[in-house]
Image (cartoon, rainbow, N blue to C red; front, side, top):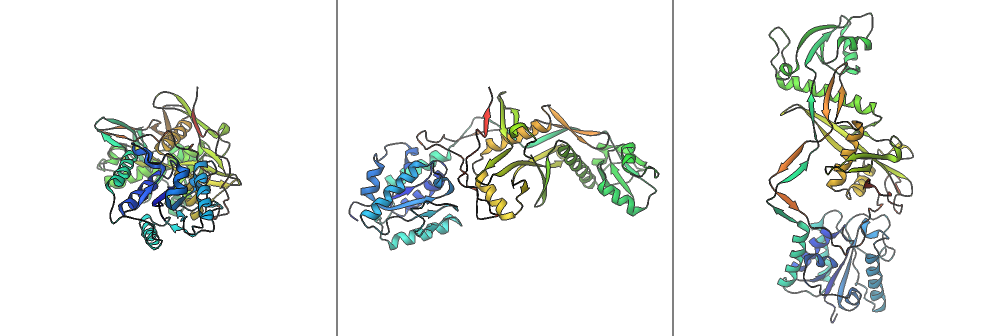
Length: 469
């Protein structure tokens, strides 16, 4: 191959930087001379100033890394490099010059590459690397007997840059814990002379939160609230009443039914869960049963333009979309939340964030389709994206107030609308993306092979999140 000694990694910046750096370091350790523009992140001199000339004259093997981000038409640099490599392969009749590397499933790969055999990394990087090294050895790509120190230093510098650094400065962290600031002071056992079957069915479906215990039911609700839901001809009677804290501690008065603290707290948690579900439904969210969890999602049109407004930690007004449209088939994503009440070490709601999808007003429930499309969208949502949407959703639920109330039947549990903050003893500093990188757009890369979700090629949201003046 003469002067052709380099392995060229063609990739999308910055989305595929981490994989490119990993692969480049592995190939360099195997003795290959590897080049990619990601090397600029490590500092020092870039040893190719003319990428065009480098591909045409010095590259022995061109490895285009296939991913939804790389397939984005906006990634002009990626596609230009591929076009140059195709010219070299055809003009110089180098049949094995281009070897695609499949990082992730791509619904519409580059037409120039669709006929070429590829190395599959989508099911595992280590497995893909083994196959790639075997193929490169068979192609007799030039390599040293061992790694070159200068080459390894360059790749290690890039890895260090992308990994960031830890320093000793304290840092603030926003949690997904929301403190329950007050619970009803008293809890009671109520009963009725109605038949056991009728009573048990009522307790199971009662609007005021209740939890069955033998022939009675534990509840925070006022008896009058329960009577409104039950037959007016059959009286509801309070059999026992005690302080809520004593109940949760497993220390009721001697003349009252005794439960272990752990069992009593489970009953309180279940009633708080019922109160949470009633609360979010009253705000207009829609219920969606997930595997092992019930979530509540923002329906389209509940908010003007589907924007939710909130105030950042810095005190600035901002907004986030909680429903967005992706793709030619108008597949919609809906931000959703679920909650898990906990009592110890202090009462709180743990809020979990989710995303569900709909098409034509119908939720996408096919498990594989939902998972693949969720992965495609949410891989571009970093911590700030989830945090801001969580804050926006809770601000909406609290209607801008500092707290919100979970209805428990004439009484309430009050929950702070501000997440609990923690202070860490150190800080993690991640280096910013290279200023010279291509424009980072959120690609529309939903999988159109599942549930007929053809969502590639559509426009991204307009300003999916922004600060307000």
